[in-house]
Image (cartoon, rainbow, N blue to C red):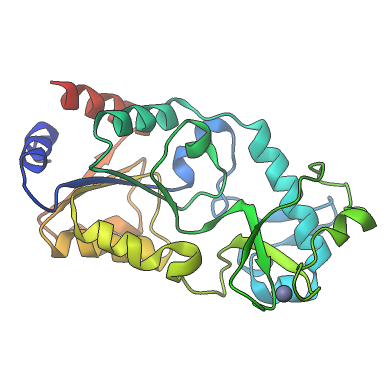
Length: 271
Ligand SMILES: [Zn+2]
């Protein structure tokens, strides 16, 4: 790998296309105890029903099982709220503080841990569990999820709680403002155009714990490379990014711990 120090110096002295952008996936949250969605065998609902994430995490499934999906959503929110940001989340916050104008953080995670660590410029390309919107798309409005008690895996929503999850405009079900497997990226909810533009203007894009299983993350890498930027893939193992981009001269891989990489990176920035 070309010396990280040299890459960083080169990017920091560029007059344009000099953003430093981080793309994070489930791997950064595993140290906080959050299981990776794709790495797991499946999803258990209330200890009896079993689904594969690819079938549970779809609009089609929601359209037939809205109550069950909402119950699971408030269970996941509970799991996220009980988890704490880890050292890597705080290191990213520290890096943002050093270069606030050039820093961007694009995340596939919906766990809110970057925000809880204090990161400000965060683009959530798979949505989040703070917001909901009408499942019938009767308007473009996005609403804060109601503040109802978070649920254990075996705990149903009450009738009164369910009523808070109806669309205030048309009365149909709302849905979590996240991207499901049978849906497409867009600008309005998932910052498709904004993040592609950031990638174009990035002198350096660093992948942290994403395996590149979905298409926008791959498009971001492609965009950065196309416009002359460097990409560093920080992961424990080779993955889809490695397979797709290893032949590109500006693509490098760092096999090791995310925290270890970020500590190194932060020290080089100071030096
Ligand atoms: Zn509606």
